Image 1 (cartoon, rainbow, N blue to C red):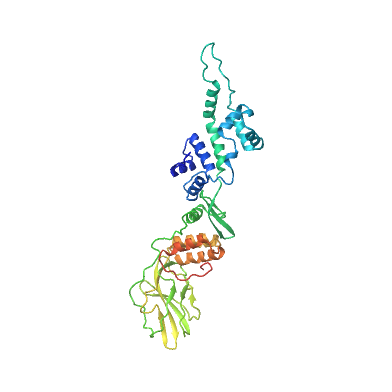
Image 2: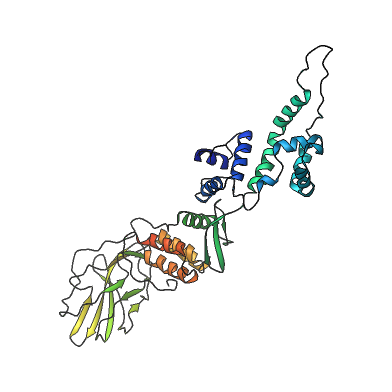
Length: 386
């Protein structure tokens, strides 16, 4: 038969054809490597539903055909030597033959009256009725024989937590026992779409006002790194660039009314976490002041945008805290939870850990790229965000 249209192959993969069409098209696919590849592509794209027609290594043409099954139901002499040899050693064909024989009626030839023309063989009528009656019985085992049982095909997998997580073409997630249904759905969608669910509106726009800027000595500029234009936890980690010749640094955090709400002690390192959590759902901006022999130098400098950020709402913070407590080693899950809350940098930190656990993985790279969407993130660490 000519090669079927792609729509026919898709209908076959979803069992939307009649029994006769399933048999005919199945025989063609079993013998045609090109059509098998087209059938596999449907499964990998998630188009096929309840069948994985992979023809995985089995030569379907070795099994008895439907016609041979009907012939063998009456007597094995109806088969050629090769078919009888195959039947003697194939438990699957023996099982199907036993099922067909339950409906079989021996062929009887009607004897015509003297001088009357020979009528149609009753055996042909019986065989025709048998084929129709057994079609539903035989089609499913036949499809199972030629197509194979719905074999799970892994379409995405990563090393994470204490083992490996994987998603099959049928949407089944493995390797994450004990996850609640909402987290299973979140990971399934993330792996299926290969896109972290980054919340819209997570970025915080910088204000044009220069109300907290000081004039820096010429050529002595440095800048803050993070948080900047992003959503954060209630106790974010502040990081900034080094300034040559700086003796120490002090961080100051202001609320939307430019009221000082947090201030660090004099620091020699270039990172700091406030002792008291900031208010959930509120916006802030911050500066870092470096002490030098020339005086105090402040970042962001006059020529740079204000460093603003927002603390996530209380509900999002509670969900994140629960996920970190219960599933702290599941980095893809945490990356997805952070992304849902609009925390790009924290999500990227979890993806950096996955990159170490999965060196060279294209999937990790694609998931990481989905966090940026043109945005510039501050460098993240290769350990889970604290």
